[in-house]
Amino acid sequence: MDNQHSRELRAAWFAATLPARRLSSEVAIGPTRIGGNRPVAVQTMTDRNTNDVEACIEQIGRIREAGGHIVRLTTQGLREAESLGRIAGEVHRRWPDVALVADVHFQPAVADAAAEYADKVRINPGNYNDRGGNFEALIEKCRRRGVSLRIGVNHGSLSPKMVARYGDTPEGMVASAMEFLRVCRERNFDQVVLSMKSSNTRVMVQAYRLLTAAMEVEGMHYPIHLGVTEAGNGIEGRIKSAVGIGALLADGVGDTIRVSLTEAPEHEIPVARELADYFAARHRSTARPAGYDTLPDPFSYRRRETAPVGRLGGDRLPLLRSELNADEEQALREGRIALLDAADDDPVGTWRAALAAMQQTGDRRPVLLRRRYDDTDPAAVALKAAADFGVMFIDGLADGLQIDAPAVPQQTLDDIALHILQASRARMSRTEFIACPGCGRTLYALQDTLATIKSRLSHLKGLKIGVMGCIVNGPGEMADADYGYVGAAPDHITLYRGKEAVRRNIPQSEALDALVALIKADGRWSDPQE
Image 1 (cartoon, rainbow, N blue to C red):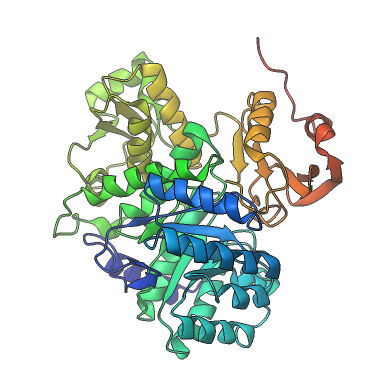
Image 2: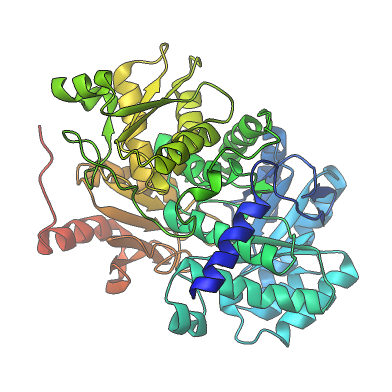
């Protein structure tokens, strides 16, 4: 990216975001509309085989009862497209307020078939060899039927052409999306939604920011779908999703969100709703925080330069307040370490403004961030704290943190804080499991298998393990993992080292032992401590 283009994108990002919510156009997804001034919509995806029509309908009913009115179904072949038609007929009869989305990979012909029945079709541009032809035919089909389109780019599944030019980077993700967006604009088709997903929150945030800026430069205002892929389950999955999604919602970017958990899809809806509501309740200032646009490049990671004090600052890993020793606590009391509190309803803006002021005066003290939460539920504290603190570490702007929540035990708060640092790629303190949420393509019992793998491997600090239900969400979308456990066929697994398949089609009964043996052979195994 040349300097002139970089400056143009940077100016466009700051123009499109804070203090107001990003301006986007409205898109209809069946009975639901997103974008414009509408509240952020939440959605999820079924994890049943789409050909099991009754099971899908029953699950969609549970999702609707949980508050989800946009539901995606995997549509990997023509048979699944026909099944989607049967599901849509019954769902629209029972619940006319529910919109159905077809999730299509690899086969453009399937997207065309699914557009006969779905309210929206999601495609991955990496699966299209030409930007015209099949894609233009799909646009016309969607236009005729009043179907919207999601151009969903995933880190790790770019087309060979984009990888050759940009590598597997946020720039490549955005270039892929913009190529297809320009075709939509040429065809005067505006019912389009964009997503830039990754399991790496730093990549995900940078890609969405670049996309927002690139669209702003070209006068495009399509709505944006936010999500972190393969976030996992439990508190880890919730925090990782909140770090990535919250980083963008804090800047007013995002019109619909999905929190991807390796759990029943109806569990995702309350989490997504809580996250959307947390930001909707904020009263945005009409003025941009002082010095906001003097902060570092929003499209790449650069650690704020500081003069270290003890173990805080410089190139040292971020610390929790509870980890400071006596000398460091003394430095904090004396002001040699800056303690930045955020008591208002825009903590990110408050912290950024304070940091901008420090930058303008040449103040290079390490920074410790603090915020208080009065919630009594640790899960609520975790979600809010992840949404607030995470972006500051994604951007390399802070050196430590303190979550102040009097109703929650300190050990729990420390655990939440370490999860936030890991999710924001600032400090690895435990095994990270990059686990897909499961869908109709999943080839084994994903939730039970993830629990078993976690029980065996959770002590391996610093390793990233991908646990993926099928090849679609396999080596590409777990691109950041050290090792991968990927469904290859029903109850058969292929093991990966990075992006390389090292053992194929192992019976699942043998796969976990084989993964342990692989890690040991690489010298990366340690026995769990008693």
